[in-house]
Image (cartoon, rainbow, N blue to C red):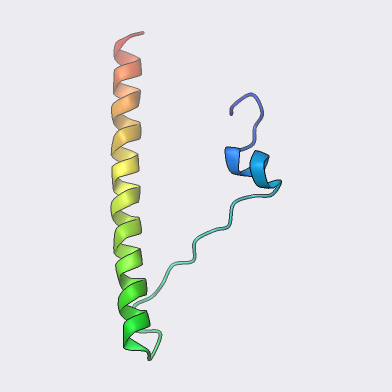
Length: 66
């Protein structure tokens, strides 16, 4: 993707990927919606943390073989 300077999403859909809006707990009066969006935020935080860890591990592995 470095040579094309676009992401796979952009190649397939012809536009930039949508950004994920952050949810602030308690900003809706519907309890079920608040719970769902709060859970979504928790899952996204975990995924970001795991992605960062995987990227760091890949970098360490690549650097060790240079």
